[in-house]
Length: 127
Image (cartoon, rainbow, N blue to C red):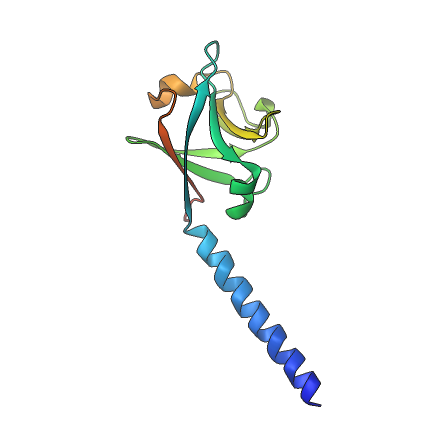
């Protein structure tokens, strides 16, 4: 009987703390930077990795925010450029394992007026 009560208590506490930590992740901001900018398209190759996205609980087709010194942009997490309509922001993990931020048929670096080593903050939107 005591074992059953202990299991129930552990289950209840587990649900409580899981919900607590999931909520905390929504308020988390991860700081990184632009590793380099693709000269031909202005794509931003960042220092963020899949582990950073996982820490925020982001999965494919979720929205996330990137903030620079002067702007905040809402971006769709996808797999490739074509996951969003032309002119929309897309982010995906590139072949090197880092988050690339781009505009489908646009120039992300020009839109954000950033350069190599510019600092970025990655977070979930609060809706």
